[in-house]
Amino acid sequence: MARETPVGMIGLGLMGSALSARLIDAGVGVIGFDIDAAKNDGLRASGAEFAAFAADVAAHCRTIVIAVYDAGQVKGLLPDLANAAVPPLVICTTTCAPGEIAVIAEFASRSRFALIEAPISGTSAEVRAGTATALVAGDADVIDAAEPTLDILCPQRINVGAIGNASRTKLAINLILQNNRAALAEGIAFAESLGLDGATFLATARQSAAYSKAMDSKGRKMLARDFSPQSHIAQTLKDTELILREARRHGLPLPLTSVQAELLRAAVALQGPESDSAAVIEAIRAGRGRDEGHS
Image 1 (cartoon, helix red, strand yellow):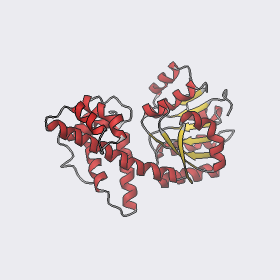
Image 2: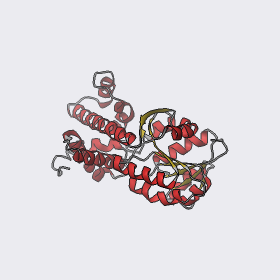
Image 3: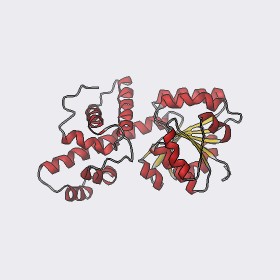
Image 4: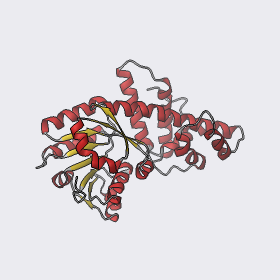
């Protein structure tokens, strides 16, 4: 991809904005679009362009990155991508269910535009810093064609095989990550209830056998009740519900994740859907989640 060729960015939330910033810093032009016009302001301030419609992005960009909320929104973009005069190469970072990304990939194949699956494991801050990991799936030749863009977007990435495997891997990783985060929240709340200083406890836990990266990314936010978003808790809940739905399809009970989903629903009610995922600790502090219905 020539540096002067603009990359399309559809979805300008936390993740899309972080990905756009990486492209802009690398000297790559960005044409962005979001259904929420207010999100264009940040892109405009960076000197990038924005489009009035997704079809305009498809008309002007050979490579398009999708960073929207869910698979339903991805599916809504497919006609615009299919109608582009020059079939684009599409990098889908949205976390979808495996069956949903398979339907999207089948449509792409029929419509003759190239698609790779590249959900990202990490917060928007980690994406911005280049320390997040993309899980890449699709045809090898398409991944090779996307490599110059992927090198900028996410220097750390793992090829996990065929379309669908990235979604499967991302959901399984998210299951572990989300339960680690909930365990951290419960541990901090427990330590505080015992009269321990939270910051001292966190520093000790980070040097213990219980260490997880959630302590680095969310521990201080939990202690400070700083829920300014690096990742939205509503998105975390959306992914948790995808995980539980897939587990039910395969007849697998997920007791820890089911409880965690109850805590997330309670935290959304307490702190709002736009809060950071660290806000799960407020459900524990408030004693919520115990009487909620099971998934």
